[in-house]
Structure formats: structure tokens, C-alpha cells
Length: 77
Image 1 (cartoon, rainbow, N blue to C red):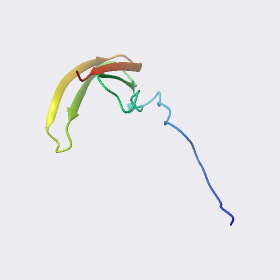
Image 2 (cartoon, rainbow, N blue to C red):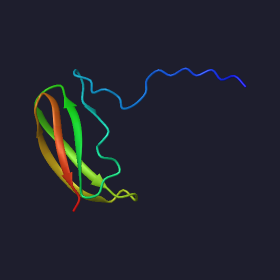
Image 3 (cartoon, helix red, strand yellow):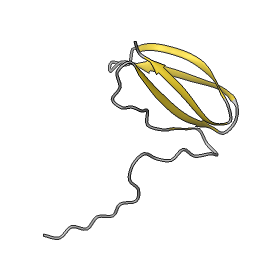
């Protein structure tokens, strides 16, 4: 049996410097706390929401993002 695989990339997508992007949280899955890394092209306000599977908002806040890489530690305890 012969297989042809065309793999463009493996792993988590890189953050893009010139646009807003979010990386995979880690650890995933998590218990208690996890870090969410995101990139912002410029400083400003960012909305952050956590929802359950039915779409109900469990937590909502506005964060101040710096230009570049930002880390949000989410504590679910």
C-alpha cells in the first residue's frame, strides 16, 4: 500500500506580527489555570469571554493589550 501525504505545517500556527492572532492555550486540556497567548498589532483594548457549550457567557472582561505578544493567565478555579 502506498500513501501520498502533503503536509503544509505541523503543530500550532505561529502568531502573526501584523494582525491579531491567538495561539493554542497551554496546557490543554487544563485544570485550574492555563495561559492564552495572543498577538496584537497595536496597543489597545481586547475583549475576552469564556462561554460554556451552550454559548452562555461565564466570564467577560476587557483587557489592555500591548503591541506584540501578550499572555493572559486564565484561572478557572
